[in-house]
Length: 437
Ligand SMILES: Cc1cc2nc3c(=O)[nH]c(=O)nc-3n(C[C@H](O)[C@H](O)[C@H](O)COP(=O)(O)OP(=O)(O)OC[C@H]3O[C@@H](n4cnc5c(N)ncnc54)[C@H](O)[C@@H]3O)c2cc1C
Figure 1 (spheres, rainbow, N blue to C red):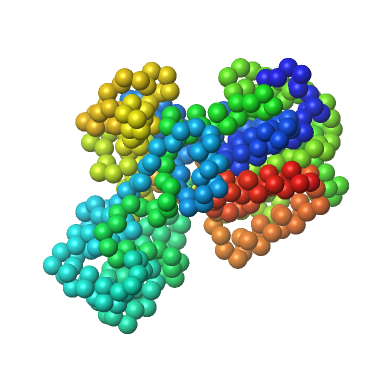
Figure 2: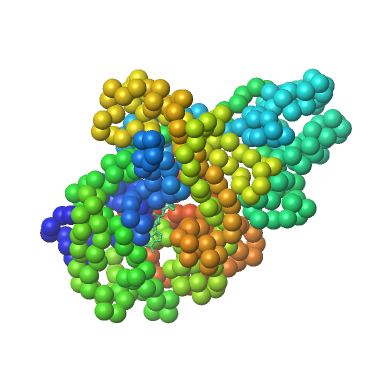
């Protein structure tokens, strides 16, 4: 920690949270000459992207599988500037009727699932949609061609209905096919899951990428610090206040050493970027905003999966599995994701890729994020966005209006599902706003 900045009054900005939003805002502001104090509640940086070496030297992502994918060249250029990445065009098949088939469903999936009827189905699809390379399930359900309609109905029953029911905790009979309006069926054999131009993982893992982003003389990071133990927002006074009796912040810095910052002010009047949950910030005064979360169970597995990620719509209770032994790919022959940074050189490729050896498989069990999930240490993951919940979110937002130095950014603060590239893009916008103030 920089010795001359150990008082809060010496910083230009406080950032709460070290996920993509917090880390990018901090780094860009520091590059512009500001001094930033970052506070992170977890014992580590990198937000939901955090990964670490687990059993068998396999790099495991602790908050669900994350693959960076984007078509946004500005975002791509920005993240490429912080370390090396390798291409990871992920195949993410689904198990239906005991068969592992590509998803989004394509002609190969149809051949595997519908066997002798497949040729007819594919002919009908080609005739009904001669000029496009994909079609949505809803378009198929509304097709005038009965074969296309029956295909969509079968896929809906075998996959989309049970998967959506488990993921969102909705009884299967209440799943409206219209929620699937953007789910594509590919009219060909393309089997890479995401359509984006750039699909990649950072060499050495996300945690190491975030460390590079945050290692800068102008940024002080304290992990293991809950900002809401220190500050409170006063919605009537429109201010952010230090809680009574709090005079210092104690946490661990990027090297893992204990560090302290003196809280020498009562009122936070510098910008405070908050990337935590908006309802928690206001002590749930309008109730908890509804989220789904995941209970992720990690197990050693000697067989591994047929692909890095596999979806299981028809399984009991769980939705997906991830084989982290397969989250590796050689970049220059000796650099892999699932390897410690030091000592990576010269290790056997086959060992690194998890071929023929025990791997780590994570199984995702979706559940409601409620008081019980919270007390178990689970985190809110997927906002349940509907009109009622949006109204509750807007109430929180309304209360915070007028606190001019409070900046809300990120998936929790904005109650929005952001993919990583969207989070990066949003953070870059906030940076512009902060620098233009
Ligand atoms: C299971 C899952 C899989 C995903 N897979 C992908 C994928 O493959 N590709 C993709 O593009 N996106 C994926 N995402 C989305 C990705 O996780 C988000 O885009 C990203 O996390 C957004 O970054 P953020 O900074 O908004 O939030 P976060 O990464 O959640 O960071 C917020 C940070 O703030 C900290 N914090 C909160 N409150 C406080 C407080 N009071 N005091 C101090 N610190 C606090 C939290 O501990 C956290 O570290 C996935 C999401 C989930 C849930």
